[in-house]
Length: 167
Image (cartoon, rainbow, N blue to C red):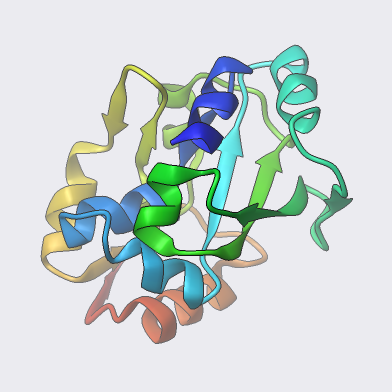
């Protein structure tokens, strides 16, 4: 997928809900529903140079409300053959998280939800070993408490159809 290749070549990696959805559903076809329902692609970077390189790939970046990321919309057109074949022609929100520069392993350890513990770049897939087990059991596990934890738990139960919550 050209979009992903460009992100990876710039030094970024994709982590969180987009990868979680592919792993949970065991296929990439259901990504169409993920995008249609407002799902986004979270891009993480190990340093400021990679952040600037990823930001240079698109235009129209704006700061998120929480001021922890840059966000823009990417149009999946017919020229993005692989991704177009999966999700069709539509826009997908991309966020470049710049509140913490870290390697994928360090980043996964900082996530508030164990279930989001998935990441990939062009050559490697990382996951929190417990994340797959939790996804299969439709159980959400919160690791850290923060200002947004309540709204995030509510979002996951309403939008992603979890059955249980474990601390």
